Length: 410
Image (cartoon, rainbow, N blue to C red; front, top):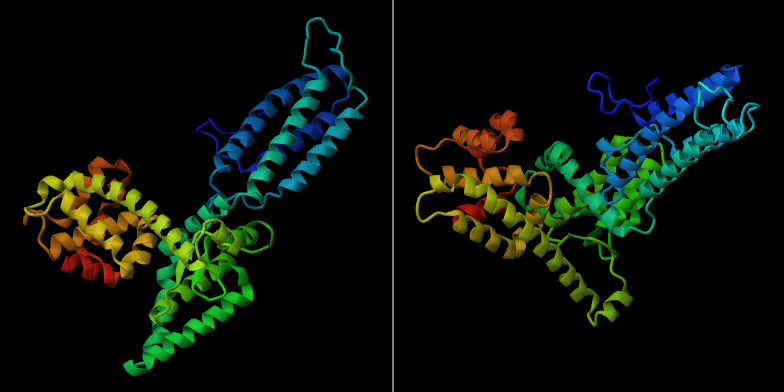
C-alpha cells in the first residue's frame, strides 16, 4: 500500500486530490471490509505509518506557500480543503464507533500492532495539516502576500499573454490613421477600459484613476482563483483590464503608476506628510528596492562577458548607464515592470544586443550566438534556451522604445 508517491522516481506524482482519495479508500477498506480484529489492527497500524508521510507532505506544502502564494499555473486545482476536512472528521467518527476500536493490543503475543488510537491521532493530525493549508491559502491579514501575488501573477501575464492582447489593441489603434486624432482615441480607450475595470473590480484603482494597487489586485485575483468557479481566462480578463488602463492611460498623458497598497489619510497624517508626498515616498521606496536588486543581478551577468567589452565600455559603465535610467521619470515605470518580473533576463539580453549591434561595445568578432553559448555554459538551465537568447541579443530592444532610445543615446 502506497498512498503517497513522492520520492519514488518510477511512480507518477500524485495530486493532493488523488492522495486524499487514496486515504479515504484505504480507511473505508479498513472500517468496512475487515471482519477479524487481528486484520483490523494490522490495517490500522499500516495506515498510521502511511498517514505520517501524508501529514509531512501537506506540512511541507503549507511551509512552501506561507511566504509566497502560488501563481495560477502552480496552484492546487479541484481540491476543496474544507470538504476534505469534513470527510476526514466523518472518518474519525466512524473509526471511534467501530466495534473493534479500543485502547489495547489485539492480544496475540506474536502480533503486536499499533493501537487503533494511534490511527485516530494520525487522522486528527492530518486534519490539522489541512487546516494549516487552508489558513495559508486564505491569509486575510497578510497584505504582503497579496502584494507579491499580484506582482507575480501580472509578471506571468506580461510574459506569456500581454503581448498578444496588446497586438489586438494596436490593431484597433491602427484604424485611427490620422495622427491628429490619436490623442482623442487614446483618451476614449482609457476611459472605456477604466469604466470596464471599475465595473468588475472597483477597488484596485484610486479615485483619481492614477494609482493601481497591488494588494487589491492580488486579493481580487486570488478570490477569482479560489472562491469562485473562475478559470484562467477569467483571471486573464481582469489582468487585461488592469494593463489596458495602464497602457492607454500613459498614451493619453496620464501618469498611471502601481503602488503596493492604498495609503489612508491617517497613515499620511501619522507620517507628517500629505497624501501626494506619501505616494511619492512609496514610489521611491519601491523604485530603490527594484533598482538595487536589478543592478546586482545585471552586474553579475555582465561580469561573465566583461572580458569581451571594448574600451570605454565596462561592467561599471553598463551599471552606471542603467542606474541613471532608473533616475529618469519617463523610464521609471517600464524599468520597474521589466526588472522586477520574469522578463528581466530577456531585458538584460536585449540591452546586451543594443550594445553589441548599435554601439559596437563588444569585440567585433563576438556574435549573438556566442554570447548565448557563454551564458549557457555558465547557467545550465539556459543551455536549451540559447536560440531564444541569441534572438533577444540579435534583435535588441523591441518592446520598450523609451529604453531603447536611452541606451542608444547614452
